[in-house]
Image 1 (cartoon, rainbow, N blue to C red):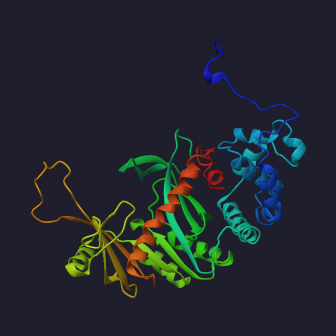
Image 2 (image 1 turned 90 degrees about the vertical axis):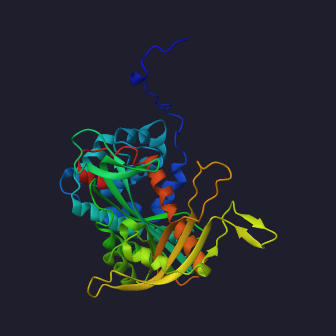
Image 3 (image 1 turned 120 degrees about the vertical axis):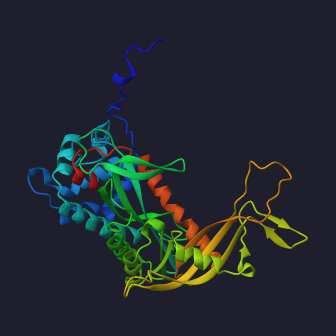
Length: 388
C-alpha cells in the first residue's frame, strides 16, 4: 500500500450524513444559549454593512468552532460536516464568518468585549466557575507575543518574547489578558485585548486591570481580590488602578538601585527557609533544608514621582547561586544569592504571600491553551478581525 497523493493535497473530511463529529458541542451550545450568548451578541455587537448583520448566530458559530478546535476561517467548515446541520440551526458558511469578522471596527471589538463580560457574569450564575470567590480571588494580568508570518498582517511588529528561557525579538501581534481564578478553580478569561507586536507590556494594562476587577466583582468575587503581575507592569498607573478599584496588588519588582539597597538592609536573622516540594527535612536541625529563604521589609515605590508614591511590603526570596562546574570539594568561600523581590499590599503572612505570587504562572496555562487552539493562527490580515 502506498499514498497516492502528496500530504499537501491530502485532506480528511467528516462527511457522513448520519454521524456527528463534535457531539460535545450539544451541551456546550445549550449552556451558551441559557447564559444568553446569542442574545448578548445581537444586542451589543453591530458591525456596519450587510456583512455585520445577524451578529448573534455568527458569534455563536465562531465560539462553537473554536471550542471544537478550529483555528482558521476555513476550519469553521467543521460545523457543516455530517449531521451537524441536524443538531444545530443557523450555521453560517466559513466565508460568511470571515466577512463578518472583517467588518469589525475597533468600536465593534469593544462591543464584543462588553458582550463577553455580561456573558461571563451570566455563566457564573449557572456553573460553578469560581468556587470560593466570596473569600479570595486572584486576577493575573500578562501578555503573550504571537508570531505571525507574511507581510499583510496589520499591526505585526517585532516584540520581545521568551523561547526556552531566552528573550528574543519575534515578529507578531501581542495579546494582553486578564484572567480570574480562585485557589479552588481553573483560570477564567476576564478580558483580552490584541495589541501591535511592539507594544510595551504596560500599554493599556491600567484600564484592563480596572475592567477585570469590575468583571470579577460582578461574577461573585466579593471577598479579597489580589492582582498579580510581573515586572513589566511595575508602574504607578497600574498599581493605582488596582487600588482605586478596591483590589490589592502583588507585582514583581525590577532590580533597581533602591530595591537593591532595601534588600541589602535586611538582616541575616530575618530570613526564613521556605519549604519547596523537593526540600529535605533535617531531623537533627528540625528544619527544612532548602536553598530558598524569604524575608520582608518596608518599601516606598515611585518616590521620585510627585503624589504617586506607594508604601507597602517588599517580600524578597533569595536562592543560593551555585557553580555546578566547580570540582568536588571546592566549596564556596561565602554564599552568593540571587534575589527575587515582590512589592505587595497583600494582607496575608509573608511565606503565604510569596507563594501566592509565584502562582501567577497560572496565566501561562491560558496562553498554552490559546496557542494550541484558537490562537494557533491569527486568521485574518485585518487587525480588528483578529482582535475580535
